Length: 275
Image (tube, rainbow, N blue to C red; front, side, top):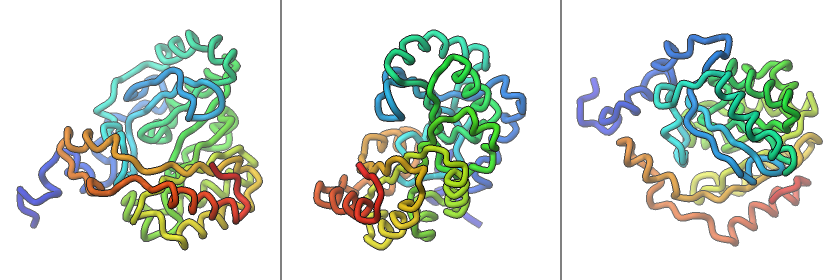
């Protein structure tokens, strides 16, 4: 039996993680109608979460526990703010004219938007009624929750594939790679536009064989418009400390420009559009 004082038992967050990934939150996820959602925050004026200028909504709740997560405060539903769908739609409508004029739209990120699939389904539907472009920023781990009707209101999927090598994927996320691969293959069959995102962490995800495998998997998919190689950074590390978690990548440096370029060239050499 583990003793109090051991690393995993020092935080209420870690105690939740040591159980089924988000089991303690399920009792608060009892609204299958999507009438309300647990929202961490939203950001206006984003230019990196899809085309044009966007409103990005960050949902609470995630099954993954990525080592480099810069928003660990989004992991649990109960840490968010309970927002009605009517209030969220009204707020979005207030930005709609400006978003349309700037070629942007709505991106729902997290956390993981598919933890609260009923709420995000309704918010995407509202965005389409307002004539907005829509983007789903997801790990794909819960891709089965996005049925074809859900995806009809999603114009672009920002699919985070953390690693190609299953052991590395589990080390990074504490979950299995296969659900994400299955979702990527389904999006390809649907010809749904995708931007694949790959976080480059020196000493963790940068192995040439890991990058090569992912590049060869993506390259034949005609629906993948871009591969975005995102350099690891330390900007979220303070949050881990603030909520009592041990941040295991504290000594890890961002990738050098040489490493970044090497990985970009690996994707390009396989036939991907990478940036």
